[in-house]
Length: 217
Image 1 (cartoon, rainbow, N blue to C red):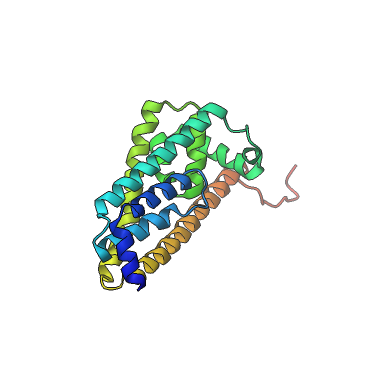
Image 2: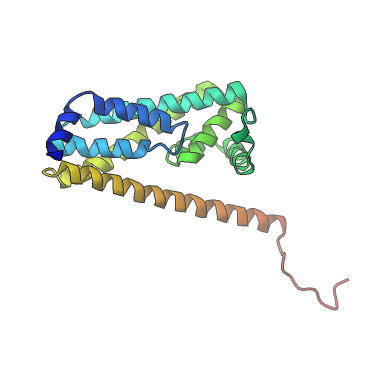
């Protein structure tokens, strides 16, 4: 039975190993489903009793922190133009955005970016490249990683608690919810970026469409 197999797998160490590996890789390669792994493990925790929810949060937080620090170190070591993908126009725009946000408030942007896949990559690399002090970056990254891991795992745990007798359904439902939340976060982030861009354009040209009249020189 799939449920029995899922329960047996959750009781061993491999669930946490997979969570750690996926979350660590997700910090660098944003298409890897780190969020989904944490949410699914949270659902499994309450639906089957294993692995412990605190262990899921702890492992996910550690992996997220290690991944963010790795990106920070890469940015400090190689900068923002060493590899071809870094020189893509959209990527350079993301680095420029991250640089501006970091000068306005390191804590806010590092914490917020942890919840947005590509933003966290851009922010962590840029923080390293622009020489944000490690003593400032590391505590913020640790707090952000813990908050992110708790958020993802608790969402899964809540779904697992609603479906305690159907662990397979709980895991699938938690993945669906995580995907939906990801779409919402991405949409909100894109909307905020568009409004900021429009505001910047408006500030640069406060009256861009004012018609001319015969009285104009």
